[in-house]
Amino acid sequence: MRPTVLIIDDDPTFCLMLKSFLTKKEFAAETAFSGAEAINQVTKQDFDVVLSDFRLPDTDGLTLLEEIRELKPGTPVIIMTSYADIRIAVKAMKNGAYEYVTKPVNPDEILLILKNALNRDKEKEAMPAPTPVKSADSPKVKKSASKNGLEYVAGDSAVARRIMEYIDVVAPTNLSVIIHGESGTGKEYVAKMIHQKSNRSHKPFVSIDCGALSRELAASELFGHIKGSFTGAIADKTGQFVFAEGGTLFLDEIGNLTYEIQVQLLRAIQERRIRKIGSNQDVEVDVRIIVATNEDLQDAVKKGNFREDLYHRLNEFKVIVPSLRDRGEDILIFAEHFLSLANAELNKEVEGFDVEVMQIFNRYSWPGNLRELRNVVRRAVLLTSGSHVKKETLPHEIVFEKKEEVTRQSQPVFTQTEHPSDLKSLAEKTEKEMIINTLIKVNYNKSKAASLLKIDRKTLYNKMKLYKILHTEDEE
Image (tube, rainbow, N blue to C red; front, side, top):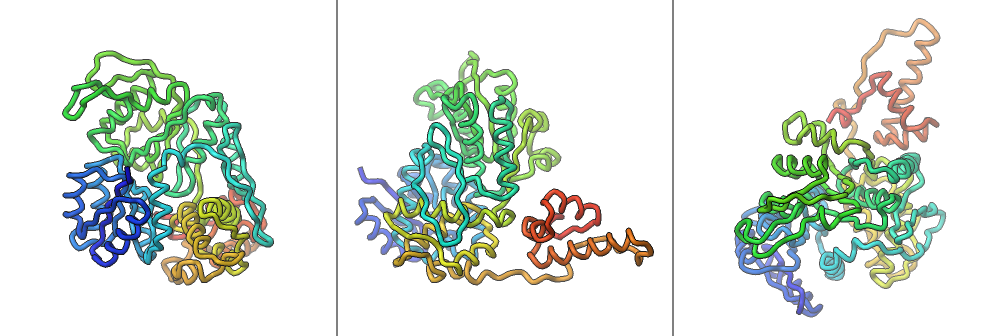
């Protein structure tokens, strides 16, 4: 049976073109020209994948995404957007979208993403990556491979080494772990590494996207239900806790769980028992919990959106995964890795990146983090006809990214001191000015600033705190 895809866009010509292309590629494609029409079709028919434009005449992609998730929580939704809306696309990913693709779309790129969406369960299986082909003068790709074949690109920066140290320390224990970082930074890979280096590595690693769970079905998905326990429960269902027995349960975007489900989750973790919906019997479970979030759970606790007791129960160990823009030394390492993957996926033999492309990669801010870098590299490999990726294959908005001008408001905020009258004060004033000037020079990239100042990142933060140097971004 051919996989079904729903194409949602208010441009009939575009819909017809894409439908014709996908039909030739053995898809059964349907079209909708508005959000209302799309919801009507999703209600009547099950689609394997939904492909939707972000800007529609009667709604937007985020609203439509939420409605589709409520109706068909297991259906992957791919958002099409322009690079002007890149941050909105990232927000859509946080809200449960499977992937985003930028316009103007490349049909082959769409086809590749659709196939990945259809095979997303297989995609999660551990498998060794092909040997990467290096760019000239590019950094060596350092990877960690488990006995089960899971491969994690560690990076070579100080922060990358620290993450690996944390993984090695916490993996052999049974501590619950919170992994914090922006969307697309690789939090699930960190969770998998913890599992694979633990004593539970021979048992299941079960991953759940809490952002994709509807309010009504979250408890059923986690704990299971018995037939007839609620409308639509036509058969018994085994929960993910049971599937993860003896292994690790990874709850991605834990902050999306409702308060009621948080209560049940806390009980399950504390008592190591779960109860199916509609049942009066408890089932013992032995599961390690690892959670990930892109929001500040402590702040959510203060606002009453997250239970404090659950937070402290989960926060036995925390790993912070930094954004890609804060680990500049690793950007080209990740790019090389994604180049290897793209070559294998697209049956290409691109050898590396031009020096100009590597320079562009290093100065771009990467709001979508590793996920965006992967997409950009895959698109570039697809469009490359020679041996090396050239600037012309990159999206215009990456090549010519508009940097915000440094204004009075974006200057570092610090407390003025009197003119120094002693040698110590003079030295402090000179050091303070040097740190400020270096931060401005590198557009407040802390890793680059620390490198130029010949100090580590922790020392830089301590000195910024000492001298009350506060960039406006740090206030958010």
